[in-house]
Image 1 (tube, rainbow, N blue to C red):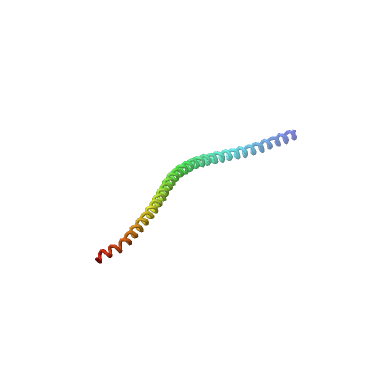
Image 2 (tube, rainbow, N blue to C red):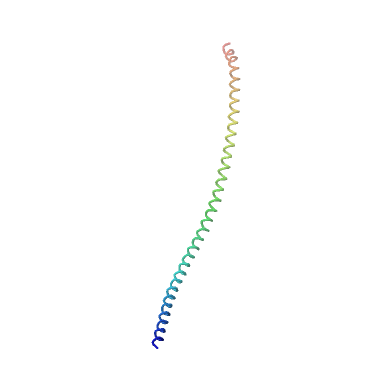
Length: 116
């Protein structure tokens, strides 16, 4: 009978140890579930931030593309105007040199006419 009591006592101890381990595991599971919830909330927040930043980037990129296009067009117009001004400068230089040559040729005749 003593052996039965001892065996029963060992069974009760084993059950107590099992309950204690089960209680610890339940606590660990709850802790892990809480951590998963926290991580999921962080993930959702990160996803929302990523979507917002991508949208902002897309908007900024479109704006930058528009501004760049305006700057390129402005530069092209300035290049064209510079080219036209150079051509006009060359034409004016030719006209000025031609007028100077004509005046230089007429100067002796004018001088003689004034002396006479």
